[in-house]
Image (cartoon, rainbow, N blue to C red):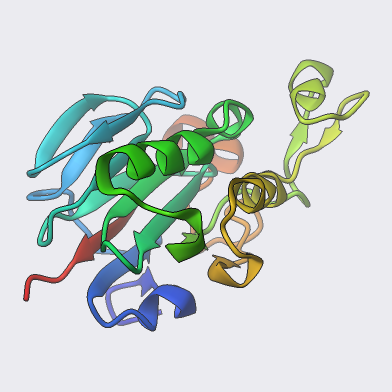
Length: 208
């Protein structure tokens, strides 16, 4: 974690042309001059070419350098994608609804359509979110994830498997393994209810 309370992913740090960060409750990240969303817990993905609120949805993609894509989370998972061949990028807000709806698959399909992205070229970083250790859900939600009764859901493993099934290599997917409910460095809606703030995560391609 740097002096601004921002976490980074080792897999994305290896890409010198990428800037990125996963916020904590102590982060000074602002969405000012970043592309953002009115997040609605969906699988909707919007392509952007500039900063500001792009509209309703839960994922952003761009093929343009210099544009920071951002999402806000407090138990849901921020997922950042970078195409090492075309340098297209994506920022995803993946809660249980978006995960169950296959939002990462929708994003990969959008990147393929717009930027000719191939899953084998994707580097994916899954940031902090509520872990299986703490994410107890009722029967209705549990059934969406293949469980027969109420229990704990693993959103990281589900999103990882969705990406693997889509063709992203396992070695290209890094999960930070940080639970927002367990770790007081993060806001958690389940722990703090309406008093929970939001962490900002972002990704940007540096201008040449």
